[in-house]
Image 1 (cartoon, one colour):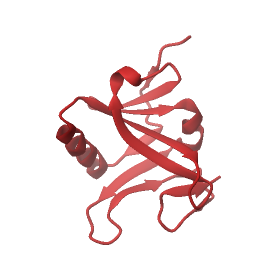
Image 2: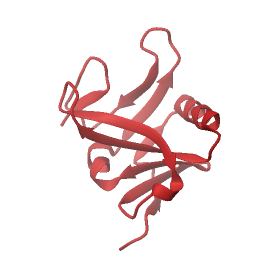
Image 3: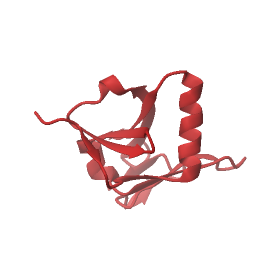
Image 4: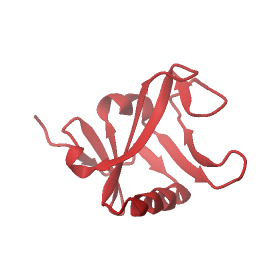
Length: 118
C-alpha cells in the first residue's frame, strides 16, 4: 500500500475567505483538525457535497492531501474524481451566505448549490 500523498498542485481550490472561515471554525473546536471534503449519493441532483472536520489520524492511503499553509484538506480519491478543480468559497452575506461549491465537473446543480450531477 502506498502512503497518502501530499499534493503540491491544488486539486481542491480554496478562496482566502473560505480558508479564513475553516480555520476559524477549526480553532473553535480546540483541536488541530483537517477538513475532509467528499461526495456521497443523494441530494436533488444525484450527488451531494460533504465537508467536515476530522482528526489527521484518520487520513488513509486512499486520500489526497492539499496543504494550505499548514491547514490540510483531505479528499478520498474516489470523490476527487468528481471534485478535481473544485473551488470552495465562503460568503457571510445575509442571503446566500455560507460555503459555496463551484465544481467544473458538474453538468447540473440544484438551486441550493449543495448537490450536483455529472
